[in-house]
Length: 271
Image 1 (spheres, rainbow, N blue to C red):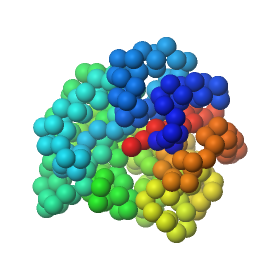
Image 2: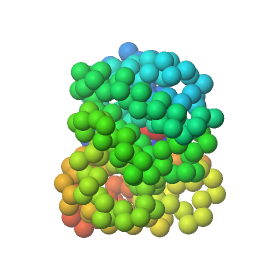
Image 3: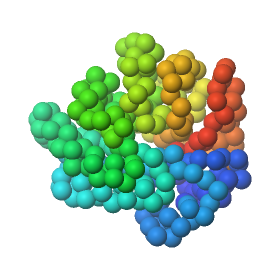
Image 4: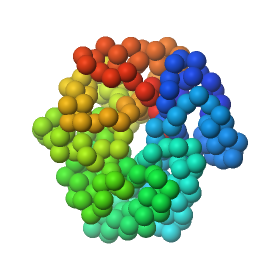
């Protein structure tokens, strides 16, 4: 969703021209382009897919029943497998009128339904905790502890975590906890926090806000994380910006981090 106005075909062309080797796919653009033509274009491109977003909503947030949400997630898993995405981001859905224990049970039941199916397709589910700003529409799952309580029910090779800096940077003792989290982390999404967010779509480019991103990336590297770093920029302002300049700025920022690996993902399509 970072390059929100570009089509999938534009994404693939521009990312390659800008020297990207990987990208994180947004399932909506794949569906909009037609699933079969989109899969063919991705396979024929010079890019690998780091993750696919998103599936879930087991609490009925998006108007689907539990069974419909599971069915859609199975379709997303098949797509992820066919485009070579190693993980599929899972969003719980909001509490949506349920008592919290029932919402939690729906999430666990959804993961139970999907974990073995995803493993058969060589796709790891990546559960995404989100900041309370997104409680009304997206997720009732906000903290590391609540996320780990669910993840520990599963094999970490089958179900892991999508680690979003925007969502988790205010967690107490985050840097100290990263070694504990590292085995669970399937993907990392980078964006920065405006001192006073004006809305829930008001993220900043890495380095432009107040999140200690350098320390977080350093801690992840030291803890043994070797996956991709994806951009996850929801911004009503940056969606109107020049995407080529935006991506170059992010690439240069990442390369400037002390001891950083060469970035292999520059953009994240999200919804």
